Length: 196
Image (cartoon, rainbow, N blue to C red; front, side, top):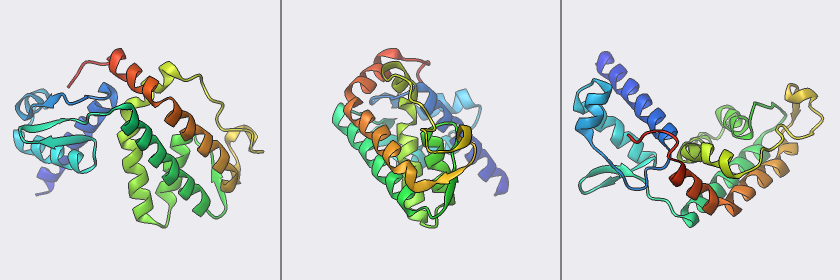
């Protein structure tokens, strides 16, 4: 049983990584037999991993199998808005200091990992996982942002008051909500990596 679990976890991680790198699949089918051959595993762990990823909202389950989630500008804006609400809730719930990470999403995910509210943490991780395929596209159509912002933290290394993050978090996600159509367009047209 432990060996089967290891195989499932490796398959899940490999598929999750591909989805993140390949970007939005926009309804492209995910053939179990092809993925199994590419990963050199049987079809069972691939089916289990795809079912897991569908449960996380990273792919969709259709009548004919699994496929990439289809996004439009409104659904992507909604996803950025949700991530912003969850992130602000985490920031506001944090008592005490926080150490800034390299990027705002990494800082938010660190806060989620430290959160007492596991449901909030789980949904924050889920929203950020669903947005991961768009990170490269964000870089193509948004100018770089200074992070961490000037919060009195020496080079972003020291502990800072988490409440000071609220405004930068709000701006970060609001900007992506406004630019969701451009981000989606860049993600689809760039095809940065080969499809699954």
